[in-house]
Amino acid sequence: MSSHQPSKIKVHGHRGCRALFPENTLPAFEKAIDLGVDAIELDIAITKDNEVVVSHEPFMSRTICQKPNGQDIPESEDMMFNLYKMSHAEIKAFDCGSKEHPSYPEQIKMKAYKPLLNEVFDLVISKGSQVRFNIEIKSKLEYYGIYTPHPN
Image 1 (cartoon, rainbow, N blue to C red):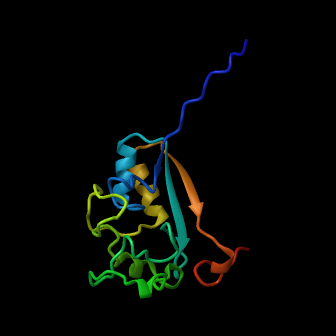
Image 2: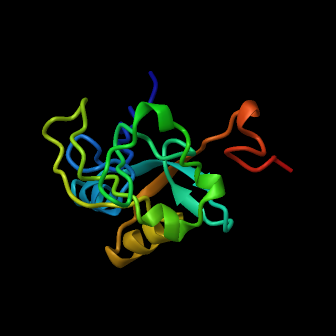
């Protein structure tokens, strides 16, 4: 007879709590922590000023982000706002939370930006959380030197 106990299923907050809050934003991560997830899943990219920014794509997604002037990003400019060519100050000027998400109609809309990974760490520390991290590095061979740095 085995004494093996079934392990507890670990719950990961995918991009924070993207069904309820704008994905990969501080409010989404805070909600995931408040709901008691075991881990926060997030994606990272590198900025022009060599900061680690939280973003699913290495560019501003026209699905979720708007330009600093509040206009939608047209399809013709898809992938044009390259995070690797932008400073975090430039990235922070885009609103990635006010636009209606086509897959999550109940998502709360709010002005939100793509935070630095350090900001997420600071949030977790400030909440006294023991949450773990599941961090995905967005990297493709065809992106090297264009949307991402070359790996060393």
